[in-house]
Image 1 (cartoon, one colour):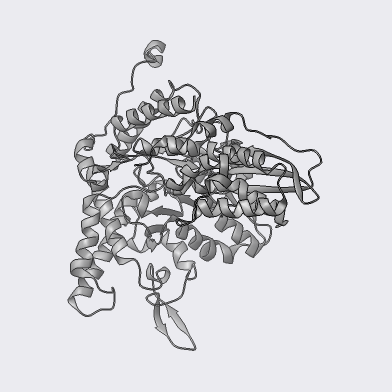
Image 2 (cartoon, each protein chain N blue to C red):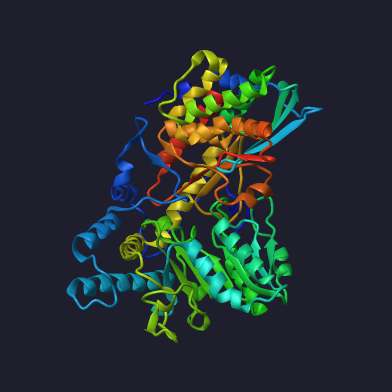
Length: 149
Length: 428
């Protein structure tokens, strides 16, 4: 039996209570909305991309502890990242949560590895990936609304 | 009676009223009838409080399916061999059971469908569609399940009709005056939920039916959530249509029933074409079968129908009044216990309410509540409960919902309450 503490680690509680980079971003030039129809979670991701580098990232909306912490941790991580590197991070983060045999590169995941606990909770994986799908949409200009479905 | 005796003391529990001929439910015995309840989840005895999503099945229903597939499996109605005769007798016997369960006047008024959803779609396409012109109106309420919204929206797209929605108040009760005001010369059908799956509200369906009938408008009742909770008498209600889902009534998934007044069903075209619903087929002309077979195209879910019959036998023997009394007492017990939880907010506080406790807990998202409760062995539902407009009405994304069935007891509620305290502790 998996321990609840593997899912709800202290870092997650911290980012849920005090989400970083929360609020609308003035001067954002990339924006996408994410929606998880299963639980009603909604978030808007604002990015400022200059010379192929994400200089600012913020989000707002409402969601569960996992999705809020994931969005918070993601925006922390994105700042200063090249767009291509952010896309690569989306791919590896998504794979590590959704594929059984995906290699876990703890070094590249860094702080994001606190979210790996959701692997034991199939119903919660989409909570952790919502912000990332939204990032993918914002970077790829795939229209406004990203969905976990 | 003086005022003092009317108001009473707040601490006093209301006495359970059991109607004559309906002994109180022996829940310990009832629980033993449900093998699935005898298991542990995450190392703790299962507390199943997701009954409004689907109910568990008693041994008798499981055995009815096993018996059918072990001894009687064959196709119905046209076989000349013994197995087909037995299967047909069991299938049609279940129709009689549904007829008695709903107190319909005639067995031909019971049509087997996949569930309440299909029943509503059938009425939308076969009854309403040929009768609607652009600008005509269908009236529903703001507390409907998606299954009683989307079929009408599709119908409106097809016909140019307009969907009207009677509002609900902050307690989750329909605003009856507004409902009556929305009934007008363009209203062609009223379709309302009998008991709300998201809020637990029992609608004043008698008043609503009377108001609709006053101006000659037929009424469909969505009884998916009501049928497992309360005795339903379609003749006393005088509704034109009533739909129910077997899986919420301790029967298998994928089977349900539509009741319709015979003269309406007679006048309706078939919903689907195929085998069994015909009397004569040539390439030039097809003659449809009589009621109810006109609406039952293709080989039906025979085992499911037989399971539904077994489930109806089971609840009928326990007594629908006893079941309602038990679930009402449990809801009162749970509502009182929940009141002591800091930060809880009940969503749906109708005076007339059945078996459902929908709530929010401080700033903890319902999804997180659900995961922590699951770890405590408690199954509840979190989300919009297929009633997104209800969530929009209360301006919330989701709720956590505990819903009670005949096998739940006060221990289940105590475990729920203790686990909610744990949620607060974890998220404190």
